[in-house]
Amino acid sequence: MIQLTNLRTKVAVAHGDGIGPEIMLATRKILEAAGAPIDWVSVEMGEQVYLSGQSAGIDPNAWNLMREAGVLLKAPMTTPLGEGYKSLNVTLRKSLGLFANVRPTQAYHPYVSTHFPNLDVVVVRENEEDLYAGIEHQQTEDVVQCLKLITRPGCEKIVKYAFEYARLNGRKKVTCMTKSNIMKLTDGLFAKVFKEIAPEYPDIQSEHMIIDIGTARLATEPENFDVIVTTNLYGDILSDVVSQIAGSVGLAGSANIGQEFAMFEAIHGSAPDIAGQGIANPSGLLHASILMLRHLGFAATAERIHEAWLATLEAGIHTADIYQPEISQSKVGTQEFAEAVIARLPRVLPQNGSNQPTNTNSPKIEVPTYTRQKQQKTLVGVDVFIDWKGTDPKIIGQALQLLAGPRLKLKMITNRGVKVFPNGLPETFCTDHWRCRFVSAEADLSQKEPDYPILHYGESLELMHKLYAHNWEVIKTENLYTFDGKRGFSLGQGE
Image (cartoon, rainbow, N blue to C red):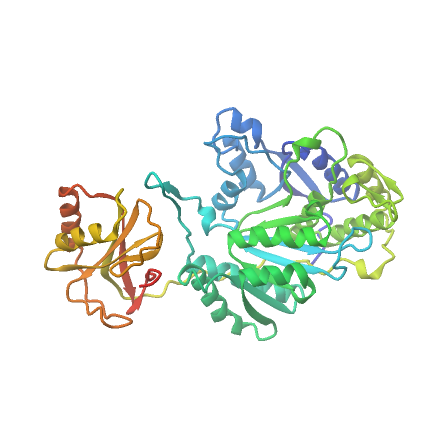
């Protein structure tokens, strides 16, 4: 990539809460000393904006400033305690279409203590969907729900991005992690898309792992991983795991990438317990700014800063969080650490070759526009969720069978996902939340995979009227569809 040294770039900057202003000051000092050609535009967001009455935590004027710049460098923010405050990070990521969260993590042994001196892993996390959609409801006195939303375009974008990132950065393997053995539709879609796209990259090894054993292996054998691609929640957890086993969550930065906008941040929080003491380590935010410089095309400047940072570690100049009496030469504060990095900028190269920065210079990765493929969608049933305080499934089952009428039949009732009618077990604990599955009366339920006849929507509405007329409290309905003849809904446990 060409080093655009004679051009200046506008970057929006949010100074953060807690330790945010301190580490941002240190980071900007280093970037300016390195000659990074950046014009900073301050935007207001965070705790004080929340408390001023802006529920998103972002000043309304900040949106246009950020979008005009196209890039945001953000220090950690504090979300006030109490209900009614939504995550600022989630709002930024989803509003600005930042579909990919990229977190490179490397061990800096022996200067940062770790059991895995060869660790070098990149977690590519889907950033907009999954449980982080934040769609939650309390449906009964006992039961709350959170919707897990996974889309095919979202899966295709992040999986393609992960493979493109691997190819551009000389990575050899991409590992997908899901729980598709249990969540066969949501995580199953992510795993399916991964297996569809992987053959397009024959030069890159691919593998799929179940998230629980995958996390365990990552925590004990990180040298066997290269690039990991996964869903939003799993990616959040995995990236913290790999950062911690590398030595410290406080050292890691991340990139949030969209088609038109990018945001860069440290992965740690605002640490209000040490705010104002001048002891915070600015390395996480500095690493985020290095990712930002590479994204902007200033790769040479990024490498100079990274090399100076490594040379500072090797000189034993450490902040309190990574200080080791047997290795460190001096314990310094936030600004003193920044000055030590600046002093090594002219070209003091690190001596330990194993700690040379990996090639993570990523030009803009183009993800093809999603093309929806037409499928035959057929209504074949309806799940009716009922709030009922009884405990005997036979009572509700027999009553609903009578209400189903001649054109519908009650296929099953589940409680917390487990079939309790017909032929449930007495040991199954039942709460006040009942999923009642109705299908066409013509359905042959004797088959392991029934051939469901079409259900007309009017028949479903007629059933709702009957339920309301008989004082059954319907809290939710979910239509059951097949797509090109394949079932688009899960079976109940034991169904």
